[in-house]
Every structure is written in structure tokens, then in C-alpha cells.
Image 1 (cartoon, rainbow, N blue to C red):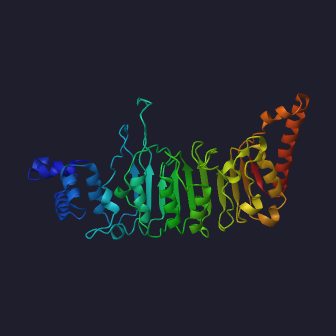
Image 2 (image 1 turned 30 degrees about the vertical axis):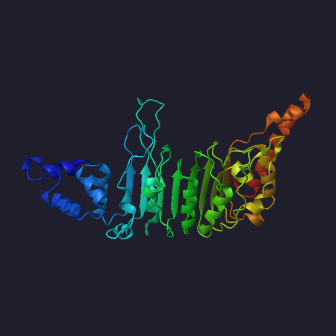
Length: 382
């Protein structure tokens, strides 16, 4: 990085040239920069040695790219603004520049997390901004967009710097890990994806309450890929509005509702609250808002069901499901549950002498439930 500007200043000096970069390559760079296909601001940034402009130069000279991997630099970010990883207008069409034509073979984009140095002070915020990479999703051939977890950047990126396309996306695999992305921007992306086969997202806390963002809107957005989606993994940070009870007028977190329109879904990995919502604060064994039975919620195509952060509240739902396995879930091969919280604390309403027997009865109930699934040929993994 920065080599183009240094080379331009000493282009006539043979001693300044590196054997790594032959004259033909430097000449190509120089001629191409003169065309200013990405705009005059890009050319000025290029001549000034800005890394983002140089990366754009390299990418604009590689029309046959099929795969790109970005590795975030090892540094500490203290400013409340995102660094530029490549020129912002690289993926924006103009009269002289068509990114869809330029990257007509690009099939996958992967973004790797930053490796933090041990000696870095803990108070610093580390991570990277996801928004600059999102416009790649609008490219016509892109199938895989994968962002490694732990991108804890929460920087303010201007939407006009990295505008999203409204064109339908042919993405098949969207993985966003622990991504900080504006919820409604994600909804916009999901609505554009009509051929998703796998979606994996761990929703992070929103900076402010986002009206219109709920499990309902996520489910509705996923309906664009209802005939193709095979794998769905969705979790929410405890402080996300998706995983938090709101006692204010902003509403209460509720369950995701029916997923039965996802007719090709084979693998589902979610939190219990995603499926059932929250328990009643006055009665820990009932739900604040009744949830659908699993036979009305889950598609019959399901082969693997993983539920995390389970409480005893889920047991009746699984018991009802177990009576209809052959009829409603003929393809189910495994069910993975976290350790089920038996809710010992709610026994305060019972005489102390009954506590042990009540706890044992709950354990026995879970054991019988497991036996029913295993007898039906479904692996019970816990």
C-alpha cells in the first residue's frame, strides 16, 4: 500500500523500480489511473497514496475475479468513523463504470476478523465495519457472502457512501456471524434474496430502538426464499430488542411464528425465546404470549432441530411434537437441546418437603420425552 504514489514520483529512476513490479505493470497502472474511471476524487486519492484507492485500482484491473477474501488489519480503532477498506464508489455504477460488468464472475466474498494483539488495552473498541462490504451482494453472480464472527465495530457509516442495490440478489449463502448491521438494512437485503439456501446471523444490540424490526419482519423477509432456504441459524444478543422483553409502549418481544412456508428447510438452529417468546413474569411455566404448537410452527421438511437456552417451558411443546413425529416430521433425524433449566426457583410456591419429588418428576418427564424421540428413530443430543 502506498507504493503507487511513491512509484509515480520516481518512475524515471531505474533504481526506484522493484523487480517485483515490471515496467509493463507500472505503465498499465499509470495509463489506467489517467482514465479516472472511478472519478477524479479516486485519481487524486490514488496519487496521494491512499490505500483504499490503490485497492480499488487493483480490483478494477481484475475482471475475472471469482473469489475475494478481506483480512482486517491488526490495529485498534478509536475513532467514531469507519476506515475505508476499498474505494467507496467501487461498487456504484456510473457513466464510465459498471461494477456488475467488471465483476461478472465474482462468486464469493469472505471477510475475516481482525486478530487482536494481547497487549492492546481492553477499553478500546475493536472490530470492523460491515456496511462497506454489503454492496457486493448486488453483484449478479455472487452466491456466497460470509463475514467471520467478532466484527464488533459500531461505527457510523453514511448510507450514501455504500448504497445498496434494489435489484434481486442471487445469493445462496449469507453468513453474518456477530455482525453489527442496521436491522432494516438487513431486512432490505433478505427481501432482495430470492434464492437463499443458508442464512446464519447472530443479531447484536441495536444502538437505539428500531421501529418495525421484529421476528415478524425477519420471517416476512425470509419468505422471499421460502422455496429454497435449507439451513437457518438465528440467535440474538441478550440486549437485542429481539431477545429483550420491552415493558414500554415499544412493545414486547414475541415468537417468530410459523415457519411452515419454508418448505425446503432442513436445519434449524435457534434460541428457545425465538420459537416461544418469554415466560410470564408471574408464572415461570407459562408464556407471556401463547406460542403456536411446533406442528403448526415447524415445516415437515425438517431434518435437524437445535434449540439453545432451553427451560422447562419447552417440554410440553416437545411432548406434543413427539406424538406427531411420523405424521408431521417424517424426515427428522436429530434434535439438539441445551441443558434444560428445570426452574428450581419456582418451587417456592410449594411446601419444602415437596421440592425433591417435584424436581425428580421434572427430570423423569424429560427422560421419558427423550425415550419417545429415540424410539421414533430421532437422535436426542444434549
